[in-house]
Image (cartoon, rainbow, N blue to C red):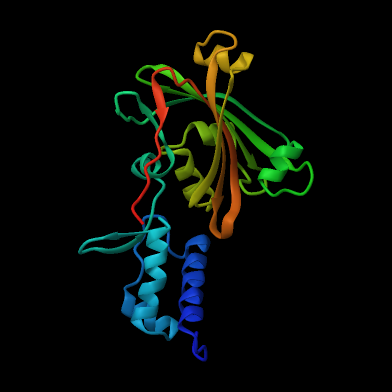
Length: 244
């Protein structure tokens, strides 16, 4: 179906786009196996090398996962993926654990100018606001304020959110077809506001770490705007650099 293109770089990018479209449309579900390279080469009328190059990039982007002896699968946004790719808070002693999450507030309203800009919305469109308190080692450490476009998550309710069986990003993926593939973050030290201090058990004016994250799905499309306030008295933000 891609015959007639002479450039190998064009071919593999087109194969990559088609594979992403398969994932977005649900043709290959989260956790589902990709057809083998020979089948894909036949489908797209390209060489196996071209298919492999496209698949390699999707694996590097954490969209696909190779399992030795089993094949290549669409990555699920499960706990392991969350801890590996998105959760960067660790104990001062190096310990890491999956946080206990408590819903503090759930509401629907209009996006502020800052939120609209972060989510690439035109004007004050409806958004869902989700506030969570995350606990580590039995005490509250992180206060998350999440904003997502109502148009991207049509039908989301407080009940649906609370009754999810996996991570928030897994809910996005399985219930709404929105796969978070990456995020941009900005951090700064600030003074805890009244709500943050109360929820995290801090004294008024205590220093905290503020992390602003825009998570995006395919084609760099914003999927979520999140501001996290972190009590860093016993915890650090840990970023691991991969070798070039």
